[in-house]
Length: 108
Image (cartoon, rainbow, N blue to C red; front, side):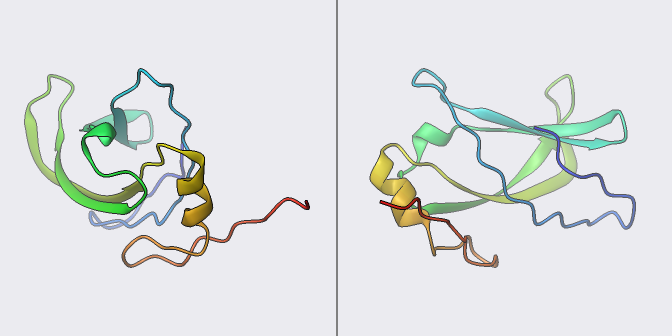
């Protein structure tokens, strides 16, 4: 998924939310930071290594295309749901420093 770009100071904040479905055999995702069409670095997140059903905050150094650590850091929060009730519990919660998530409920 491509999110918005940023052209400003070197400490940007995107404050974007997205939902990323994963398959049962996925164990990590990779977040890429780009400037235009140039990849500045990436971070891999092993999401199955954490407790599901709660928010997690991390700050990681970006890695280059050759997987070497870069001085730039990426701070992010993520929520891993391993079962449907976790998604229901997610409504009205918030990541640290973020607005509460608004969920629309389907009529019964």
